[in-house]
Image 1: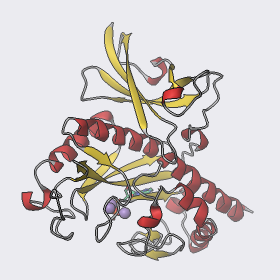
Image 2 (image 1 turned 90 degrees about the vertical axis):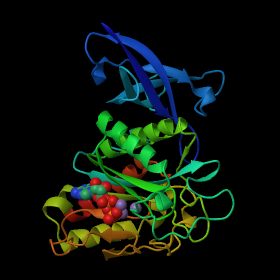
Image 3 (image 1 turned 90 degrees about the horizontal axis):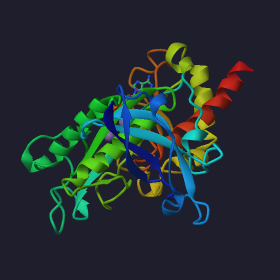
Image 4 (image 1 turned 180 degrees about the horizontal axis):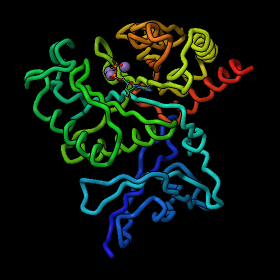
Length: 340
Ligand code: ADP
Ligand code: MN
Ligand code: MN
Ligand code: MN
């Protein structure tokens, strides 16, 4: 028997976007545990905005586990929050997103690293040189010395955890970065994304840095942070066709508000029509168009309207479970319309 440190993590009751919580339990196993070996656990919901004081037990149901390379014999145990009777807690958004194996997602998580209340590399007063050289930049005068160390350490932690990272890059504003995560099925990429956020926030503690997910932390001529959500249905990948594509876009256009509602708070500050965005109340799509709500990758039309689509509206702070649930819902109406 060997002892393992199991970090159960879950999403709390903060509105409109939950925050991550986690605590450790030590358990003994003969072999590295599989998901089925991990017991349900509990926590005090009155301290996480998930219960009233007099009846405060919430249950943690493990749904995925990840090797935790920063801890000896450690695992991160991603958990859903349940009522003691086994039904999902109202804050449990994962339970509202059907895990459709044919819907694939890729998230581009943009974020700032913050130190002393400002982006890493910003001077104590005033601003650094305007944005321009920072995107995919190199050299201490642009990147500083700490950011890349954190970003690379995070990448290694994510890869060791088995998170399906596809890449990373420095972004347009100083102190702003991005990582991309892909997953087949509507839960996989969203699960991995929350764990990647957790690993980054925890890693940053030792550098006295914070993960800043707000979509427009600096006003003025500095890019905000998005979380472009790339998605594909089986039909988009294998069949394509203009008719299906146009029906899909019509369904999105008819649900602008329903999508914006779950695409992250304060998005009006970011979706202005400037800085590679479409205005928040408009809907458009376009080939290679970074000013559109939905961008079609460069070969999409040439390939017979086949491939994936990029919804550019979700922001960096959005809850990926709510995004995938909403996109799934809109796509369902089209599947039914085309079948009818
Ligand atoms: P850009 O910055 O040009 O928008 P990125 O390379 O940062 O592009 O992101 C592209 C995203 O598209 C990645 O997250 C990737 O996982 C995702 N993606 C690629 N193919 C598919 C697909 N078939 N279905 C869903 N997402 C996809
Ligand atoms: Mn990108
Ligand atoms: Mn980007
Ligand atoms: Mn993108």
